[in-house]
Amino acid sequence: MTDAIWENRNSRIKFDYSKSQEVAEPKVTLSRTTIDAIATEGSGYLYSVSASANQENVAYQCERVSGNDKITAKTPNVAKMDIVIPVGLTNTEANFRLTATNEAGKTGEAFVKITVSAPQVVITGNDQMQIGKPITLAAKANFDSNQGNVQYLWSLTHNGTTIPEGISYNGLISDKLNAGNYVAHVTAQQDSGHRRAQSSHRF
Image (tube, rainbow, N blue to C red; front, top):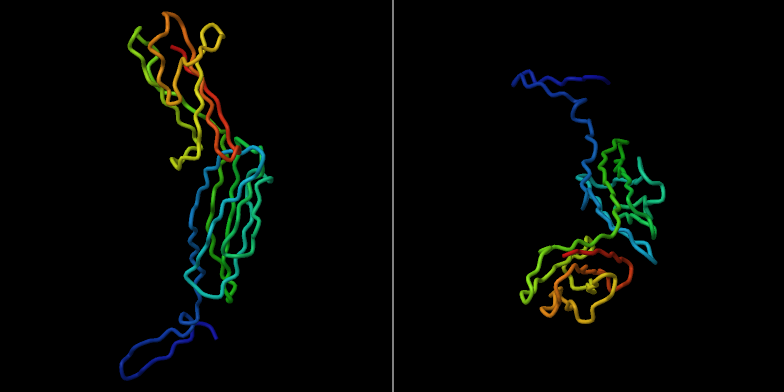
């Protein structure tokens, strides 16, 4: 029956029976729609994404729709999927679509974008120093989430030679240096050893 209408002659209220039988497509919500990952050494990483729908009894399906095919979904048929980024993969991206299909065959979808960047550490501070007036340099790695699991190892060189005690563990330059050109070096390393980056700063 198509566009059937039941008419109440007393109230003159029209009821569209066919529209009452329509089932809307599910609305899909993801716990995250972007993953900004930092490349790793020695071990790959998993990033979980959870999906929910505004309807019950839906079937989930996840698939990569574009990007690097080495980035995969470990559990593509459940509401919680694990995106797998293998070791050594960097400077790349991928896009995944997660769909929810209800018993009426209607499908809703949502997307998550994964971006993988190389480990980096940036040094900030003055590029000039007066004798007897030491400066302090600061370093920040793009894999440092302020959880105390990243170490910063400093060293100082002059004409290619390392200056013992030329810079402290927290980036303070020694006040006993002679005039000249120096280079401060820092290595940022995650306690797990999975991420590492180096940088230098001339002054």
